[in-house]
Amino acid sequence: MIEIKNLYKSFEDKEVLHDISAVFENGKTNLIIGQSGSGKTVLMKNLVGLLDPTSGEVLYDGRNFVAMSKREKVRLRREMGMIFQSAALFDSLSVLENVMFPLDMFSTKNYRERVRRAQECLDRVNLVEAQNKYPGEISGGMQKRVAIARAIALNPQYLFCDEPNSGLDPKTSLVIDELLSSITKEYNTTTIINTHDMNSVMGIGENIIFIYQGRKDWQGCSSEIMESTNKRLTDFIFASDLLKEMRSVVNHQKKD
Image (cartoon, helix red, strand yellow):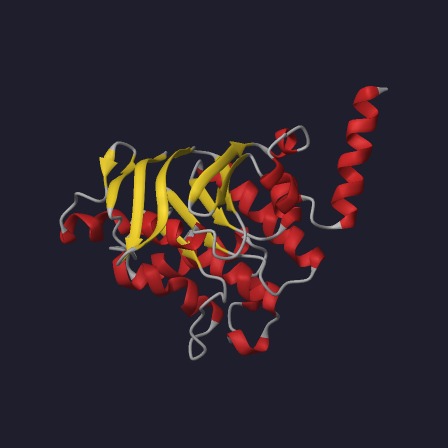
């Protein structure tokens, strides 16, 4: 579990995050959503230590990340997995070597054990057959699945995903969503996903934090969005005509 308490972040005289408190739960897909410029990316960077909050606490199962020494933060980061928006694979390394990279850096396993673990992770994302290919030889969706395999190689307790569906078609995005959701439950990780994808919000949003102008404006699950009276949230979520129609149908069925 990750808990943030009274988190503030300012850049010089500009306040970007204001008094945010929230809990991100184990074994659930926790989503951070909001308009561009709302502060959700800054929030994610504060969670993983790429930025230091101006004030407040970030607690990893009770351990205050903000107050840790540099050495303690390095140790905690070994419990984290990261999936970047661009997949961020090494072009000069094969798929297998990309997944092995964190194992080579941090694992005490011997070479054969590291290969076996990397292959297990590739098998989990259905990509063992691509292990000898290079990132440039596989599709964008496959690259994202390789990135997921690499992120879980060290059995992380905490999994962070920055726009994992960016640039993917709807069908592939659904595959990524289902994969992240199933891995979260399988490993009981605390998974936090920063996303603009409303299909992800409605499909796998078990715990959703809505950020508006640097403040936590709403928290709940996907089913509660349909009943929300928060106009800023509903304007953001139901911006498309299709989602507006879905909400209208749900509300009509409840009245009947």
